[in-house]
Image (tube, rainbow, N blue to C red):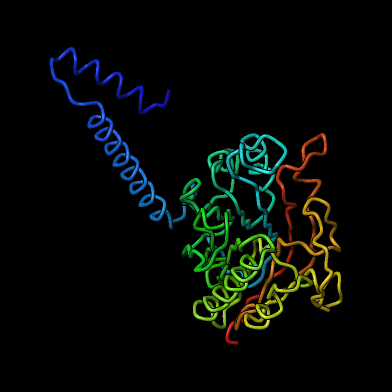
Length: 338
């Protein structure tokens, strides 16, 4: 018996006790309307709360230095934070994401994607002093959050204008942040989760995603140093993806290309086979990427690139997500007056 029928049966009993009688069909209609109104009210309240969560949280005060150079250890990781019943990750989600949050402490700046239903677990043991406030669970959140050792001065969440299939069920998109590295030094950071899958509609939506992001970068971060870190769901060699165009428009550099391919970007070809996400090695292209660009007064110097498969695995060797985390170490240099 449905919940609605149980409510109606109980209500009819109450009506009998009070001597009041309303025809069954009319009562069913009234209860149905009431339930619909409750659901709509719940949705609107949570939607408002979710969209209000464009702020960031800081748990400790941070004293900025006057440094003109420094080092950053970066990480991007799709943590598979969908509800466990629909997640493709193999390990228990709450426990795994608590472990992920703890292991992230060694990185200076972390972008995560699919941080939907287990954000409390992710932050529970994590010690980063600056962490973005989650936008909410499925279907309200975008799954994008950032954990940082450095102050986050500004945060904007921008949903994609185009989507496809199941990706339309949440407001996926990208997040923009301005992160302050020292008293006179800041960098613009983008966290991205592009449309997935390889159908014609998905590929076109992803191309539109990259175009939208490139236009935003041009308007928001002109002449500024930037980091673009996240799940691009795209490969240089996949016909239809537009990473070459995106890099040209934004003047970004892919350190993986420089380090492992001597700067030569792979060209698209028809029979390209997408590698399994959990079988990647450092010399294989990942859909999870970290791109960078120099600014008018900041120079970025990559030092090492790594697939963090061992770090984010259980003692038994099981991966904590259905993606492999990607890290990059780089030095930054502030050159005043350029």
